[in-house]
Length: 510
Image (cartoon, rainbow, N blue to C red):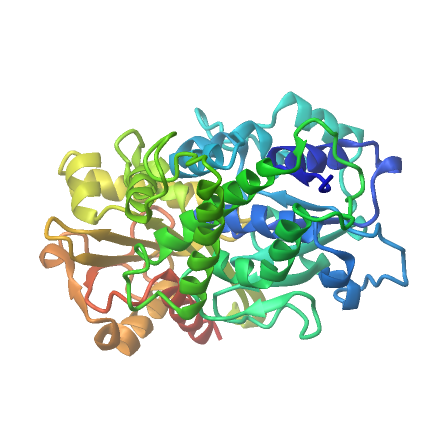
């Protein structure tokens, strides 16, 4: 009889059991896989996929078999033959409601939102209560009890990053020094050691494409083992037998994993049609995943690949279904739109202050939206630019409070969407909330306005010039130097623009 295959649902139950076990009974070190702070579809799916494949990889193919990443080595403490990798969604559980596209992809993969692990499961409760009416930072009773029973010690953990290569947010405060590898498609920031395993940083439309390529041999071995009598490694702790499966059902597991991978690949490359983003990595990943679905369908079960259960997989239908869910902001407030796809960076620079040179942290806060400023102002703010600006100011003030005393210097909103003619459009808003931020924005504009083809949005309707860049108004009261543009060079997303702004902020900070 072929050895059993483990479904994603059983794998996630295994991961939760390992994490919530008494500290004395947990494997050491616990290995986590986490996506970036924006917790977009690519980050969320990539974390699940890499954790699954690394957990069930044959020992000779496992990244730890030849790694000395971080300060942990196989010689230092013998890991299980196949170490369990625990995927963490980089968001609070309540924020799953802001991502209906992820919920749909999870359903396609045979799991629900209640199955995944989120920040509550690995971090202690926040030191300060969330804003009134905000459940984003709420802690479930189960997670709070687990935290009280004994929080994770950084030295007992290892972290693999997907869709970023520098740990950020609340996780970074405790675990940044425990990063042992990454799979990413952003600019290399040099934080992951050169000898880390894995250390994959390459240009691709989707990080999930790189995860699939990195894991392709493992996936092939798993698929092959389902139809042979060769032994399949079992992670520690051993998954419960209900839900493990073999035979024809193994093809269904492969198809579920394939849909989990295809969703971000197709979304991030506009169905492989965006020539500025689609790479050979993405095309190969899509072909690999679609071959798994085809193998499943050839066995007689179509599985709802396109628009619903019982329909055979159709790439366009699948893309359009997930894309429509991702782009639907109709039930969200402006605050929800701004926090749905949020990423933040910080720099530390020496600055003159009162005749003394002090180290000071500067913060760049970015939000991406799948609808344009026209929609956000006209529909979400009732056509009132002042209402929209107030929402931006309130969001910035909220982020100020999360900065350990360092306020947000640059608040950035990037939009990317298709207009009524089907043309892809990008827009960019930068709000400098400090004098240093104003200098950085002007430096950015001088250096990149032509290359990015920046043009004033609606004749400057959202522009503001209050902060003079020389100390006249620090912007903390909600005013500052603000510019909003249409961006003709649509090939440049946050992946490219955030480093431009970060570099400008670094340059003017001394």
